[in-house]
Length: 279
Image (tube, one colour):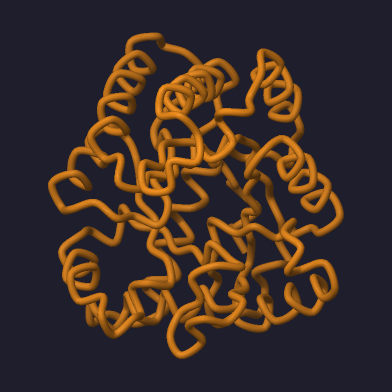
């Protein structure tokens, strides 16, 4: 896997993609070829429910530059049964699984009862601490409850002297403010920036990214969603994470190579990629 980075002018990690989705059934190999051509060394493909988590693991075994996350999105929390934790525990033992997720709370769509969302989120957090793997968190219009649960969980993790050490996880496609980001950093989390940072009407997000330390940021596509400008409204794909990184470089007035180097190092730390990103 070291050859994944060799010869690239930059090496990026798309830290959040959904390559098991039907939008990629017909052309995944060309999609991954285009990603490599744009300097994407690794893609983390993220489970949405048990079925997609299993598919993510299978894809990570089929393609050397993929890693998998396994988890249940809050939309599916209402359907989760008593077997969920054991199923995720078994999946998490696979050596291609780098994190649990995506998990969290979504009070915008409210497709599952909020009580169920909180229960399933808590169960997955506890499992992550048990198996010693970081978490990937979805948070949409649920900042208060999400932060309360993360606060309690991270404190328990720090007291337990268990297998999980910072970075504890990622809040993906970040939508909070700078105060919330600062608290997350203090709790041992990183935050991830996606395609919306490139949109013309995203000035508040751009200003926030300008204030946040690059050493705490990751880049992602959340593909097939949230395609960056000038491809907004089209199917997104991992190659376009370079456009996200380029916008961050523009906002911070630093070279793209610096954004790539720092965010890739951050991804290596949180997902424990180690020598696989060392060139």
